[in-house]
Amino acid sequence: MPNVFRFVLLALTALLVSACGVPTRPARPAAAPSGYANISVAELKARLDAGEPLILLDVRSPEEYTQDGHVAGSMLIPLPELTQRVGELDRERPVVCICRSGNRSRTACAQLARAGFTQLANVEGGMRAWAAAGYAIERP
Image (tube, rainbow, N blue to C red; front, side, top):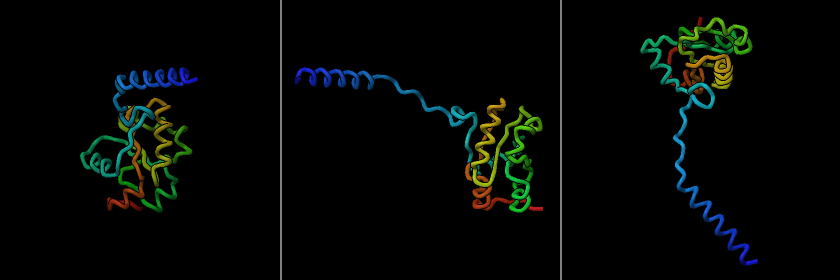
């Protein structure tokens, strides 16, 4: 029996030593696994202030968009309507999705990635984070 244990220990040691010499893969960019990047509200604000020709897609309900306010210049397409209205979006421009907290906008980004959009970003924290940062909110 001791020889079996010695053999197993030797085999495990050899595997461990050989695994240590294997180079690790470089970290994948944020957009690689899901087809979109996550950005902060500060990054969104900077991109808007720089005049980047992006589409800011708000995927909340019309009531939330109106009552809670929205980022100036945003386009409202509620998440349940996105699949049917995807043709309203310009595939050549970056699309940044925003919602209340970042959950629906992640879903929207995933849907758009499956539809072939390649320049996608999700605003982490959504409108809650935008408001908490003190950025302007447009209301009717």
